[in-house]
Image 1 (tube, rainbow, N blue to C red):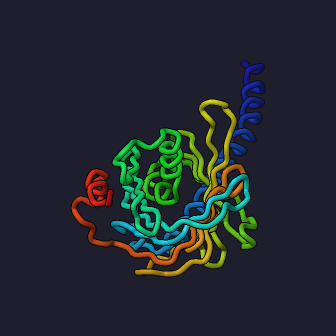
Image 2: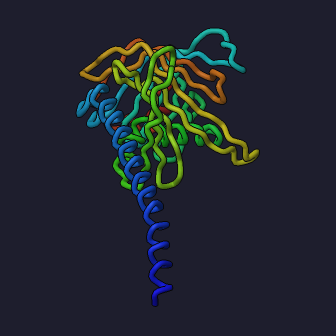
Image 3: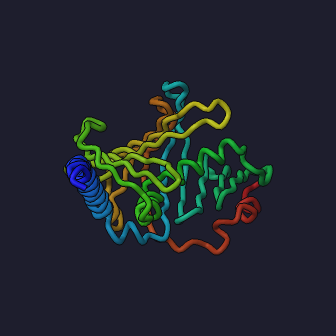
Length: 263
């Protein structure tokens, strides 16, 4: 019996530092998550708070420029984009607004004077992937899931601005990183990685936001730059934005839009 007591004490002494270390790690992780959530909460307030969280729809008008391997293509295209949470998007192109694309639910359609056709699946997948990893989806869906992991990654330089960087990891092990200006607390960059289904390599999708203007209490970036694997692929320059518009009953109908296009 006397031989057992020293062994028990030795085991307790060995276990105590391990328990303390684990507890300290848990405490540090919880404090880090709290800091990440506080940064995101501050960002939402800077973006308009309840006005941004509860907006019914947003309509953006501007010009879009394409890039090929990082080099700008000639000219820009006029476009009008309408989004309604959670899964309705309509984009109209050209001055006559006679080329339309609809992303409704998980489907994508294009409408021209030739009629309505399904968009290529690769294009639809790209749109859905960006919608699923948008700041709006992350804040309204991921952040409300208790299984989502929040990581505050410190301050970094983004677009020549000092930014707080936070990464959210969903229950499905998807990750999105958001960089927020330390002064205005507005988003500067959103990025995520995704694995190519064919080649199995990872791709980096990112958007950078600049030139904010406030409409209806909601600060809105008027310059949006899209990147794929560090190369610019699209750049959007807005000229007008409206929120919470009363839309016609058939606004989200691709068939109705097709009937209005002049043949």
